[in-house]
Length: 312
Image 1 (spheres, rainbow, N blue to C red):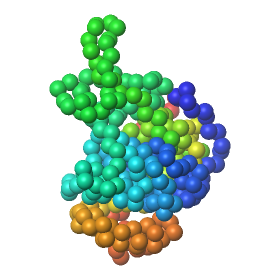
Image 2: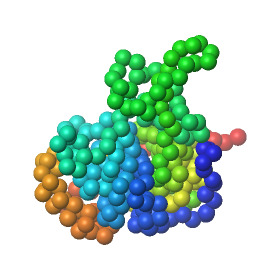
Image 3: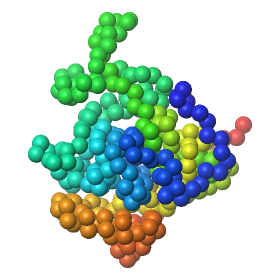
């Protein structure tokens, strides 16, 4: 555990999304909504937009639609990232409008490689001030980012690039299941759930399902985030739509395609906000507005993994 962290030992940390965001996400803070292909928590992003929390530094390896929505809502002053886009479809148009040279509401951009962002989290989660890496040799990324520096290896004399530790003020981690203490389990494609939780000052865990601690302890290797790091637990089924949660529901690919046209025009973008974000009180209201039958269509079909024997 990072030296910055103190164990959070409260036995029951379950609150609503509204309460979790109100207590942790503040104007001007550094926000990290984790997610890599799946377990991208749109419910948290929508609640932040509803609460209108401004001047955020939004950090993430792969900001996609939910970060674009925060940007379009004029809540982000700086984006720290390594890739940005609508996966498999195209650009993030809110980001494009606010990053072009002639933009009147231009945001600051701080770019790294994927491994550069991972390295920042590794340093932060390890209690180190920086992390060395080789992968900026032969690229121009370091030329446009003054935070990427160099260090000489004391053993070989070789020159390495370095990136500074990242300590988000708040990390929001989506997972398949958690207990009320915040022990969070993930399976399927892994992102940087563990690293961002250990690096952050405060952690919100958002779970598709809340289970007894005995369930967590029967399968301990799936626990990526231990409850001692977690400030709040939110039970939010379908909290990642249109992203997916492995084993619970599939990615809504049609939405990502439709979003290309919705997000191109600021008016249709605002229309989306008015209906699906400001027009509802919470995630249940959002789900009630989805196309009839869509949730049944996306619901995952069972494909059980064989268990293991932890006996001794």
